[in-house]
Picture 1 (cartoon, helix red, strand yellow):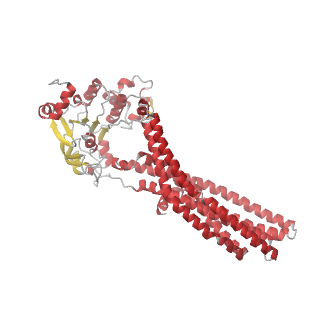
Picture 2 (cartoon, rainbow, N blue to C red; picture 1 turned 45 degrees about the vertical axis):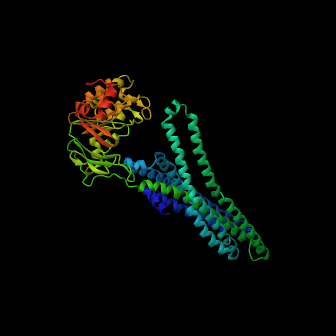
Picture 3 (cartoon, rainbow, N blue to C red; picture 1 turned 180 degrees about the vertical axis):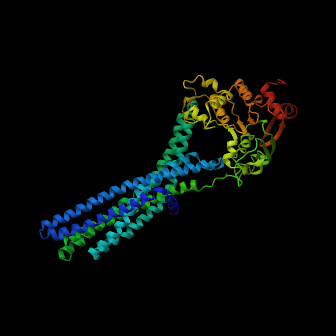
Length: 577
């Protein structure tokens, strides 16, 4: 329950609507509970004495109570809808903002599909708990207290009959909650699995179609979908026992009350109107117990969702601003001082080990190495996408952990290995690099990245709409747009993580020539082709996360076996360039 309290503390500015909704439910319940008292008097006095005026007066009173009950119910619905929808919106916003603070290592902990489920399904469950659970949560206990009090006031002996039913109902409810509570957590995990398969299939739909694996993907989806169905069936198999158990108990109580109450009426110790009013209260008490039981089931499911939502909100980002929160980065110099790194603290081996490297400001460093040599891992430490395990990385002469994250990442431009474009126009995507960029700056970035070649052929130029993920541009065009977007940042350190792999060699050469004009920018280029880094001031050769060699092209060609092997395999043994 502690988790639910913490979640509902996020009602924020909608607390006023929530309190008003509770107030109107109590008023509505009180008005409805007063009607049987009037009805009993109508039968016992008005009908018994054939007093039409008395019957009409009491009828008007019941009508007023019913009308006021209707009005308070409508007001409850209004304020409850605003509170529930606002509560859901606040939770989604806070969860989304929290995810933006996560580092890559934090995101590695949660699956993307699980985060989506937590922001949609789990929050919807909590939102429904507010909109659908508040009324019975308040109305049930209110009806129970008022109904029991008025029933005892009417006839204490008959009231003992339905009090005997309460332990039975409590036992049934305890059994159902005991069985269902752990199942709701498994149900949400099953939803996560379905989302994983759907997300993978939609993301890789081109590969699925290219390899004609549609049937295989359908079978995978069928397995997880069937798993979700079976988990749901097991969960609700017990949850639905609530209704028949309560109905059986309620009708048994009514039968016993009619038997004993009828005998009292025959014996003259009770009037017909009193029995009628008493039965109304008993039915309302039973309904209130039914509401309370449904609330317990709703809260049981909400607990599972609340725990999942709070897990995201409570998770402390592993990367935070440096203690000194430095804003100013002196220059683009980069230095690795005996750097060790592993993705998980529990990993037995380091991904990078004892990396020592210095790149003066304005120089170009090329990085070569085989697949899995940790080239990407190395450059991700510069903008603190991950933190080092040992040693330190310096930018501008200071440890990157001293800077404010936003300032550091604003000074480091990185074109990631996986290029990402967003829905919207090309201009909107480019302005991610600099929201204030002028048309002249956009033109310069596009020329430097050689994106102007294909932009001139597009019907609307920079205002051309891109599909989701940039599906209507080629891989090479996407890479050039991502390069242009990064150039607009005017970063002090510019990192290319194999970001020209999809362009032809002639275009790549023009891009490299354009980058030479950035005299004050430190450039780090990860590449698979030797021609991409031959002209760099330094070339780093990585092997299994360790420095195998560093030097100029000619030095490595003469002294480093791995570099010479790569060169000869790509240049077909062509000797000197």
